[in-house]
Image: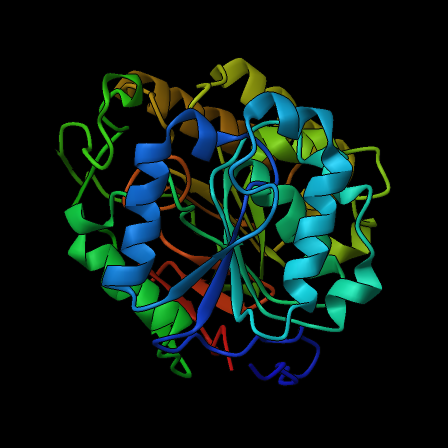
Length: 353
């Protein structure tokens, strides 16, 4: 493996692209999903090997039980650092999310991780690690985990092509497109289902709520509930970290109420973050009905533009990332643009080297 050294002016380090035969470390930095539902986990590992042509390496805590993982954040942190420092590992993918990895990032050494930049991908509770490593100077990847996204990859050929385009075959510019159809969840894992998905629905379009200008900036974002765990801690960045960003936020399978999301957004407003960003992207909300989605759109617009006067922020919702499938890979730190006139969202530089 070669460590990446490429960065665009003012941007973080891009890791080396993945290639067929590359080795991926699969880590359980949060919940012990592989032990709880081994069939689903094995289906995700098979997708990495058979569909993407990657080798898989597990670490000591990868298959620990949920109870054992919860009791030992230091062991989880040690495995994450070890995977970065392992010269034979080309990338790292989370097995699944959870709700306590903020305890892990408190124990990480940013200098040791930054010395070995490589692909790090996950979503949901993995948001904490994506932000930690991004603040250490790396591009990181908000995208599918092994059990939630990769295990179901055979159902979504377009998602497989998207993964390859972002992580294996980078181009100078990449245009995101909405998937034709999506699902709101999976078959019940406790019933023995491994890779089956829920009913398919036709895509109902991105929603361009506020379109004052073409917005350009480096991507930053993740699961809005998990970001709440970080606020007020040393892991929450200084306000200037948000300058010029395209901020993306998404809600989890716990389906927070529209009122709760409004309160979280209000906190971004009183921090002055909406005055600093250039655009806001909101992911398709898991478990929301059509009426709830409309009320969420109203809450976003009223909070960002109405209450806090961020009239220059371009806002698009119902986008293809987060806790529904298939989802995009969004690289934190890569320059991107939202163009209301073209109704386009694109990367303006490669995500990997």
